[in-house]
Image 1 (cartoon, rainbow, N blue to C red):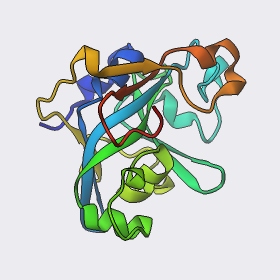
Image 2 (image 1 turned 90 degrees about the vertical axis):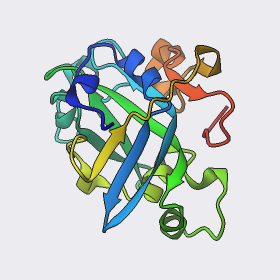
Image 3 (image 1 turned 120 degrees about the vertical axis):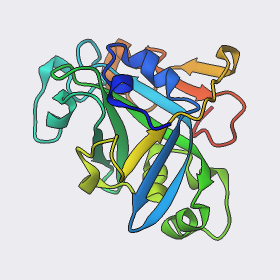
Image 4 (image 1 turned 60 degrees about the horizontal axis):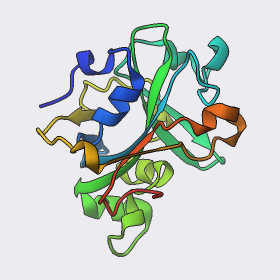
Length: 198
């Protein structure tokens, strides 16, 4: 069942980041269907999180989409090469987001291997937000994409990850955020081989 707006527009971005584990992320790009189960996420809160691009109500051409109603994509470039895929949550004006860091491939694996220029399937195919976007064909043209549409969407297949199988740890690569870098807002499936960092 495709996730609807109601899932994304709830107020607790940390809860949503946890609940996204076990959901399926799909893309239909250039006629190719690719996707898999989400196994790693990070939460970012616009109101009280120095790691968030919209901290202190920062509004730029890049962050403007963060202030939209939840259920759209925020894709931005890091290191000049990687497009990172984020899901905007909460109501209009709140600027919360979940970074999807890794999926366990399920469909379209051959296409993912071609996009990643890899001969055989290995965990690093989709483990890490930059390489995951490459494998799924996500780039900045998908900035603002409606996640209830037919290009990028998420599905609930009735999988619930047990609480004791969810690891809760600080986020990665945000040392600039001071004390907020220590917030335990990264979540991953404990036994998954597809997580970027354990």
